[in-house]
Length: 488
Image 1: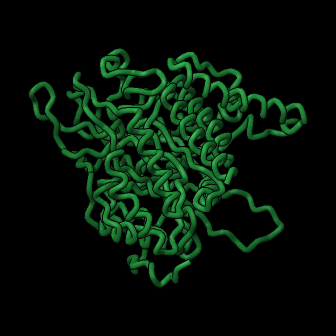
Image 2 (image 1 turned 180 degrees about the vertical axis):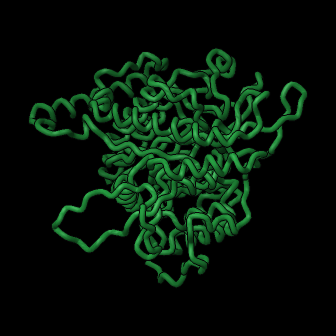
């Protein structure tokens, strides 16, 4: 352990408030024509009930501490950008199903609990490299996500009412997820019901089936000895948390709520206090501030400026937070970001979501790991193998290669291991649907297959089969490493 003075936070000495970000320069801001209408919508959102609870956020904080300290693994996944149209039962069920099935495979392969976070119920904003794009030869405003404007070229004017729509679509999605999990939907992850017919390669199908058979035998044994009787077990109910990139800070501020700080430990039960704006304002020193639009929020690669509005906002909320880390992040800059966001050196407070590309990871990840090792910070190291591996197919479709995605994950595992560190999670853009947006995987999809069911209006996503492939591959890597270690 190094002396904490090596990483003392140069964090702002100015007091933090939910709107102190407005004193900082901001990137990816949205310009609305009707400012009065915007203020009216935000005022209404600020009076609406929270979408998640502070005890749920605290539970996730405790679980991410376990992840950071090597006692659990993080699986985070979902759409690049949600559409309001995805707020209906089938897409929600499909996404939940694939995350549950992937997590069970990972539990088996890693022999660790898996913390599940969905890019869901709020991932409606999309950062863009340019404010404008050309469609059919006409220069128009870029699509910024359903909570800003429409994918329809004729409806690109930012509309404040969409923020209200985002709130209610998020609420409906979260409500349905709670309903499903409360009704035992997690039982659908029983491996005996899985269909592996999509796996074309016989050797790979045999390998996957071996894993599924072992899982089935283990679960059947637990049932026989009564390990699942008389209570809700990990086989029938799970925690699943929501997340999104907190891009639109006006909206995030409206759902940032004060919660009384914990009182001294007592045997008396203290009921949960709702996190709507209090009737009587709390003194700042008596409350913590939670972003209750989601359990987990992250800063994107385009908005992580040290003196920027997003870093200022993130430093004050109690939620665990993520930071995207790519080739443009200098090692000393990474340490300074951690110092600002994690001045108390809380394990798991910050998740570093690395996104380099399979061909670049060896050039950047080692320096980032070594820089963090020189501090007292204990972040969650999470690999985003999708963003850095986006290409364009001959047909003009944006796509990603499954092989490149797997390569970045396995390189990540090896580099961390070589440096005495540990990859603690994966962050994937995926869907539970049978789309054709990424090439490769056990279906052996080719560039020519992309048009057959290419549905994304944003970045390409791993489909259901490819997502399971990822879980099987990671499980196999850790199983092989475990067997190799036991033979030494």
